[in-house]
Every structure is written in structure tokens, then in C-alpha cells.
Length: 88
Image 1 (tube, rainbow, N blue to C red):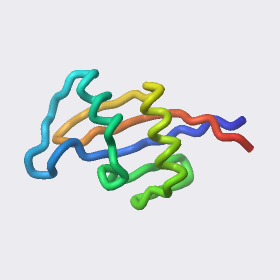
Image 2: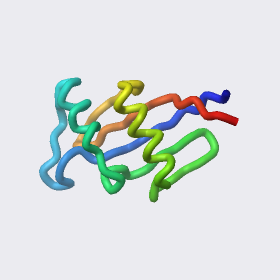
Image 3: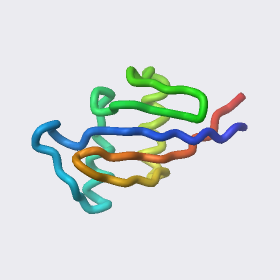
């Protein structure tokens, strides 16, 4: 199995009425309801997506449900870092 690091940038709330601070529980609750259109980009060491493929979105959602991520937040943007095990 290979472990791959993903960096994900998402918009929290409305683009014009965005928040700069949420509690950890509020972030997790929001992420549990994330939609593909909320994701601005996903990056790995070698790849980049602005239009996230459905299979990748499902992997990201599973990681979020498992609370397997770290995040930083500023100006209504949330940056997630997560590692996902990929089967060969």
C-alpha cells in the first residue's frame, strides 16, 4: 500500500459572507456536509485537480468522516492536509 499526501483547499460558507474562525467541531460538522463544488483545488506531490473526480471526492469524504485530517483556516478558506492509503 502507498500513502499519498493530499492538500485540499475549500471555501467555507458564502464567498462574500465567509467566516475566519470556527471551532474544531464546527469545522468537522461543515466538512461532513461538503459538496464537490465547495472544493477549490486538490493537490498531491505530482497531481492537481480543480474539478475533483468522483472517486477522489469519495476518498476525501471517507477521510473526513474518519477525522483523518489537519486544517488551517483564514479568510473563509480552509486548507486540509490528509494522508490516504492507496491500494496498488
